[in-house]
Amino acid sequence: MGIAGSKVAVVGGSIAGCAAAIALSRAGCQVEVLERSSSGLSDRGAGIAIPHALRETLIAADYLDADYPYWPAKKRVWLTKNGDSPTGDVLWEQAGEASLNNWSILWKSLRSRVDDSIYREGERVLSFQQDDDGVTVMLDSHQRERFDVLIGADGYRSLTRHRLFPETHIEYAGYVLWRGNFAEARVKDRAPIDEADQSHAWHTICFPGGHGVFYMIPGNEDSADVGQRRVNWAIYAATPDGLVLDRPGSIAPGEIGPDIEASWRQILTDHFPPWHKYLIELTRPMELSIQPIYDETVPAYHSGRIALIGDAGTVTRPHTGSGATKALQEALLLEELTQELDDWGSILDRYDSERTAAGNSIVELGRRIGAAQVENTPPWREMQPADFESWVSDTLSGTKLYFYGDQD
Image (cartoon, rainbow, N blue to C red; front, side):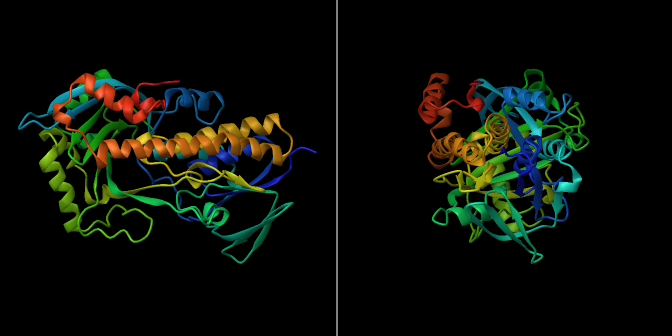
């Protein structure tokens, strides 16, 4: 009888949820996106990397506009502080091609392809119950709705995943990611940015117990033109003394106290070349956040009439640049399967067999990268290019990743 006309609930309206809604609407499903926020998502997030090939696929498949703005990175420069040298010493350069995005622009492009009539803001899912024929969803409004299929796209703290697999729990890696981004126009000493623009380079600053990265992303006015972009940076480091992380969640901009902020400034003073320190300190308190690093594997990507997508499935560490990538690949797979197969059992079984192994593999890769680049950092300054090559090869352990030069 086919799946056209099926009622599908997509729990969560972020990148994964919008992409899933696009895919399933094209299959003729009656999709309802249930987004718990009532204030909109367009101002959330910062820099996001995806492979060039995926960007091209998304444009060809009409998930993104042909003129979708991005910053094309071509190489990764690893460097370290050396006294008063403005930009430190270059330790290694490697191919590191990626399409660098502004989270808000990526989300808006996907959201524009989801009809307003099916995108329901302020709809918080409290619980759900499935049987052989479908899923009953209980909403915060005390309303019950019946669907043929439910897609959990509700992020790394997913209620859907927790209800399906209560034995699984997201695990704290023991370190954090300091994040910030701000308007490029704020930068007065532009010489290093101009140089990076010429070679399309993004920088990795190495130090004992962590590393930082910085790169350019399109500005909030949907422009990747020089002068209209945003400077995006992130620093992996140990959990600051005094920071209590007793439940999953991030420390939002404007919520970091002065004592905790002081530990970030100390990292910059101790480990960052003067120019990178100057650049990052242009970040204002309302632009500074802390993201504790979590991950989680899952036993499956579906159970019965319920499936997971994006961070509601496996939770990967940001080292792999795979959060949005994974969600978008999964949406494309859903669209492909709904065109190829005509019943939900076959569709979800195939989806599960392809995505569970892939998702769990990238989680394990993130753990290896975290161990190598944060938890057990090497003697960076003593390493020669050949040492870097061997170190990266050992870390990847046969896995391919676009951040490290592989574009397959």
